[in-house]
Image (cartoon, rainbow, N blue to C red; front, side, top):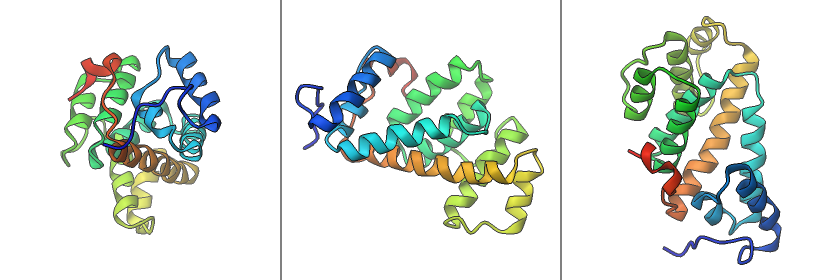
Length: 181
Protein backbone atom coordinates (compact mmCIF):
# COMPACT_ATOMS: atom_id res chain seq x y z
CA UNK A 1 0.00 0.00 0.00
CA UNK A 2 1.58 3.30 -1.04
CA UNK A 3 -0.11 5.40 1.68
CA UNK A 4 1.96 5.77 4.83
CA UNK A 5 0.91 7.02 8.24
CA UNK A 6 2.26 10.55 8.17
CA UNK A 7 3.17 12.55 11.25
CA UNK A 8 3.14 16.31 11.61
CA UNK A 9 6.88 16.15 10.93
CA UNK A 10 6.56 14.08 7.72
CA UNK A 11 3.28 15.43 6.34
CA UNK A 12 3.02 18.24 3.82
CA UNK A 13 3.34 21.53 5.73
CA UNK A 14 -0.27 22.50 4.91
CA UNK A 15 -1.56 19.37 6.75
CA UNK A 16 0.37 19.86 9.97
CA UNK A 17 -1.89 22.30 11.80
CA UNK A 18 -4.98 20.15 11.16
CA UNK A 19 -3.15 17.00 12.28
CA UNK A 20 -2.06 18.70 15.50
CA UNK A 21 -5.60 19.96 16.17
CA UNK A 22 -7.08 16.48 15.67
CA UNK A 23 -4.41 14.97 17.94
CA UNK A 24 -5.14 17.55 20.63
CA UNK A 25 -8.92 16.99 20.39
CA UNK A 26 -8.80 13.17 20.38
CA UNK A 27 -5.63 12.50 22.35
CA UNK A 28 -4.11 10.57 19.44
CA UNK A 29 -3.64 10.88 15.69
CA UNK A 30 -6.06 8.52 13.93
CA UNK A 31 -4.54 6.50 11.10
CA UNK A 32 -7.27 7.79 8.78
CA UNK A 33 -6.09 11.36 9.39
CA UNK A 34 -2.42 10.35 9.19
CA UNK A 35 -3.03 8.95 5.70
CA UNK A 36 -5.50 11.59 4.49
CA UNK A 37 -2.84 14.18 5.38
CA UNK A 38 -1.04 13.24 2.14
CA UNK A 39 -3.52 15.70 0.61
CA UNK A 40 -3.84 18.88 2.67
CA UNK A 41 -6.90 19.81 0.61
CA UNK A 42 -8.68 16.50 1.21
CA UNK A 43 -7.86 16.61 4.93
CA UNK A 44 -8.98 20.21 5.31
CA UNK A 45 -12.08 19.58 3.22
CA UNK A 46 -13.16 16.57 5.27
CA UNK A 47 -12.53 18.26 8.61
CA UNK A 48 -14.49 21.33 7.55
CA UNK A 49 -17.43 19.52 5.96
CA UNK A 50 -17.73 17.04 8.83
CA UNK A 51 -17.69 19.91 11.36
CA UNK A 52 -20.42 21.66 9.39
CA UNK A 53 -22.45 18.43 9.28
CA UNK A 54 -22.00 17.97 13.06
CA UNK A 55 -23.46 21.46 13.60
CA UNK A 56 -26.49 21.03 11.33
CA UNK A 57 -30.05 20.78 12.60
CA UNK A 58 -30.32 16.99 12.30
CA UNK A 59 -30.26 15.52 15.80
CA UNK A 60 -27.16 13.52 16.82
CA UNK A 61 -28.79 10.09 16.40
CA UNK A 62 -30.13 10.97 12.96
CA UNK A 63 -26.64 12.11 11.93
CA UNK A 64 -25.15 8.87 13.21
CA UNK A 65 -27.75 6.81 11.34
CA UNK A 66 -26.74 8.57 8.13
CA UNK A 67 -23.04 8.06 8.83
CA UNK A 68 -23.45 4.38 9.68
CA UNK A 69 -25.60 3.90 6.57
CA UNK A 70 -22.77 5.34 4.49
CA UNK A 71 -20.14 3.37 6.41
CA UNK A 72 -21.80 0.00 5.90
CA UNK A 73 -22.85 0.76 2.32
CA UNK A 74 -19.26 1.70 1.43
CA UNK A 75 -17.73 -1.00 3.68
CA UNK A 76 -15.61 1.45 5.67
CA UNK A 77 -14.46 -0.54 8.69
CA UNK A 78 -12.93 2.53 10.34
CA UNK A 79 -16.16 4.53 10.13
CA UNK A 80 -18.16 1.58 11.48
CA UNK A 81 -15.84 1.31 14.50
CA UNK A 82 -15.62 5.08 15.09
CA UNK A 83 -19.35 5.66 14.83
CA UNK A 84 -20.22 2.59 16.88
CA UNK A 85 -18.15 4.25 19.60
CA UNK A 86 -20.02 7.53 19.01
CA UNK A 87 -23.43 5.79 19.20
CA UNK A 88 -22.31 4.08 22.41
CA UNK A 89 -21.34 7.45 23.89
CA UNK A 90 -24.80 8.76 22.95
CA UNK A 91 -26.39 5.84 24.87
CA UNK A 92 -28.07 4.62 21.69
CA UNK A 93 -30.28 1.55 21.97
CA UNK A 94 -28.03 -1.51 21.50
CA UNK A 95 -30.59 -2.95 19.05
CA UNK A 96 -30.24 0.19 16.92
CA UNK A 97 -26.45 -0.04 17.00
CA UNK A 98 -26.54 -3.74 16.06
CA UNK A 99 -28.96 -3.10 13.18
CA UNK A 100 -26.83 -0.25 11.84
CA UNK A 101 -23.64 -2.30 12.09
CA UNK A 102 -25.33 -5.18 10.29
CA UNK A 103 -26.07 -2.93 7.32
CA UNK A 104 -28.95 -5.06 6.05
CA UNK A 105 -32.18 -3.69 4.69
CA UNK A 106 -34.14 -4.88 7.73
CA UNK A 107 -35.93 -1.89 9.26
CA UNK A 108 -34.29 -0.17 12.21
CA UNK A 109 -36.11 -0.57 15.54
CA UNK A 110 -36.89 3.19 15.65
CA UNK A 111 -39.29 4.31 12.88
CA UNK A 112 -38.07 7.91 12.81
CA UNK A 113 -34.45 6.85 12.48
CA UNK A 114 -35.45 4.28 9.88
CA UNK A 115 -36.89 7.19 7.89
CA UNK A 116 -33.43 8.79 7.84
CA UNK A 117 -31.84 5.55 6.68
CA UNK A 118 -34.46 5.07 3.93
CA UNK A 119 -34.14 8.66 2.77
CA UNK A 120 -30.33 8.48 2.72
CA UNK A 121 -30.49 5.33 0.58
CA UNK A 122 -33.11 6.93 -1.70
CA UNK A 123 -30.91 9.99 -2.23
CA UNK A 124 -27.98 7.74 -3.10
CA UNK A 125 -29.99 5.44 -5.38
CA UNK A 126 -31.48 8.35 -7.31
CA UNK A 127 -28.41 10.62 -7.30
CA UNK A 128 -30.54 13.14 -5.44
CA UNK A 129 -33.61 12.90 -7.66
CA UNK A 130 -35.82 11.35 -4.97
CA UNK A 131 -39.46 11.08 -5.86
CA UNK A 132 -42.15 13.05 -4.06
CA UNK A 133 -43.26 9.99 -2.09
CA UNK A 134 -39.78 9.46 -0.62
CA UNK A 135 -39.50 13.11 0.37
CA UNK A 136 -43.04 13.15 1.85
CA UNK A 137 -42.22 10.00 3.83
CA UNK A 138 -39.08 11.62 5.27
CA UNK A 139 -40.95 14.82 6.11
CA UNK A 140 -43.82 12.88 7.74
CA UNK A 141 -41.48 11.92 10.60
CA UNK A 142 -40.98 15.54 11.61
CA UNK A 143 -37.95 16.20 9.46
CA UNK A 144 -37.81 19.38 7.38
CA UNK A 145 -36.71 20.40 3.91
CA UNK A 146 -33.61 21.81 5.60
CA UNK A 147 -32.96 18.35 7.06
CA UNK A 148 -33.36 16.80 3.60
CA UNK A 149 -30.58 19.04 2.31
CA UNK A 150 -28.51 18.25 5.40
CA UNK A 151 -28.80 14.56 4.46
CA UNK A 152 -27.12 15.49 1.16
CA UNK A 153 -24.44 17.35 3.15
CA UNK A 154 -23.81 14.27 5.29
CA UNK A 155 -23.65 12.03 2.24
CA UNK A 156 -21.01 14.32 0.77
CA UNK A 157 -18.93 14.36 3.96
CA UNK A 158 -19.05 10.62 4.44
CA UNK A 159 -18.56 9.77 0.80
CA UNK A 160 -15.25 11.63 1.06
CA UNK A 161 -14.36 9.90 4.33
CA UNK A 162 -15.35 6.35 3.46
CA UNK A 163 -13.78 6.37 0.02
CA UNK A 164 -10.56 7.98 1.27
CA UNK A 165 -10.29 5.47 4.12
CA UNK A 166 -10.69 2.58 1.69
CA UNK A 167 -8.29 4.10 -0.86
CA UNK A 168 -5.56 4.63 1.73
CA UNK A 169 -6.12 1.30 3.48
CA UNK A 170 -6.15 3.00 6.87
CA UNK A 171 -6.48 0.45 9.69
CA UNK A 172 -8.74 0.68 12.72
CA UNK A 173 -6.84 2.42 15.50
CA UNK A 174 -6.10 0.61 18.75
CA UNK A 175 -8.41 3.07 20.57
CA UNK A 176 -11.36 1.80 18.47
CA UNK A 177 -10.49 -1.90 18.33
CA UNK A 178 -13.28 -2.79 20.78
CA UNK A 179 -15.82 -1.31 18.34
CA UNK A 180 -14.49 -2.96 15.18
CA UNK A 181 -16.54 -5.58 13.42
